[in-house]
Image 1 (cartoon, rainbow, N blue to C red):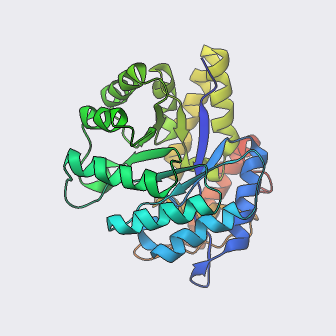
Image 2: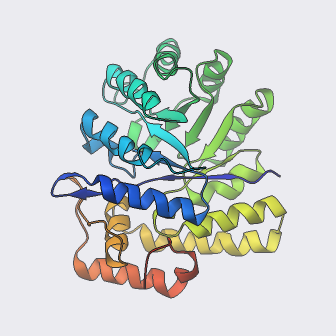
Length: 303
């Protein structure tokens, strides 16, 4: 098995209500040191839905301007209107993106014909960069059938998908699409699903937990590559425990709070309606990570 890719959907650091470019650059640099393959900016973890289009671009530019060698830059170009996504894709391509990713239009379920037009225009405006579908049914209000995804692949308008789902059969269906279209990439939308996705024939994971504990995902990916069954099983248990520690509140707020408590130059600020953690909540979560995940933490954090 090839080593699964680990892509991190970065939090978007905020300070005084604005995007903190220096903090974003710091985080991207530390993630690169940890051995992850790339970053995704901004996605759900990066609060794209609470940033205006200029701020979404600003968050990506802050990371891209750091020019971190070897770190793949996936630009989040999701928008509330198609034209937002088109403009963001064009801007990202002009600022060093290696790929672009977008959720399909939310609220109303689009037709397959429109999806073909939508992703085709994103890819065109991004200058032909690899273009990924991002599905998150819980947030979108609908999902895409595997057959719809395959039609977009066959039309040449998408090159991969990030699927934030826990439906094993759906992941298997996407893997079957990949069997027929080997260049198509299938990425799990959470670390809990990396093992299943990889064993099904997928390519990796977009893992939010890696904002604070990236070495866990990296070690799990390496163990899958080596076929170390016992090690994979043990690490999967750690992943599930980590999800219980971090999953008690909205993930952007939890991740930022932990980063702040453990010494990162990142505030706990999130955009409303998300709520920042209280200091006792932040301290308790950070202590739990230090107790069980010290060896997996982001470089630069101190327990």
